[in-house]
Image 1: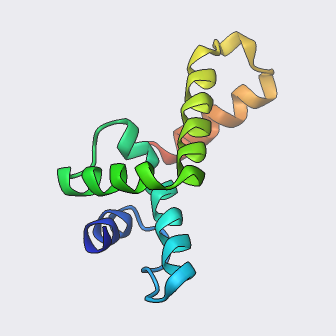
Image 2 (image 1 turned 120 degrees about the horizontal axis):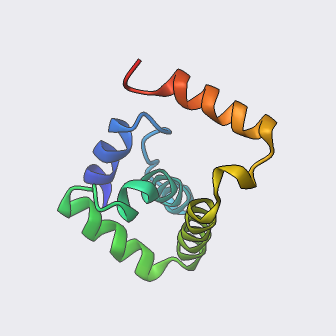
Length: 104
């Protein structure tokens, strides 16, 4: 799972490279998993990374819980209408999107 995950994670500029001993490797892999969830759900990972991530998810209940939480959050956010948000939050979100948009 190693190098392909590292390349995918590094491409999105997150976290350190995995350590080489026991629990630290598992924890780093789990951190890498969280960093890849959005691309995983959007089917934007290279096939090798996608397959490695699925193997990890098949063995790691912690990461599966994180994936389910992430999916629920996305579903909830997609169900919101703009008018459901307080005006201050709408303004903050618009400012954030405008600031971080690729179109700027």
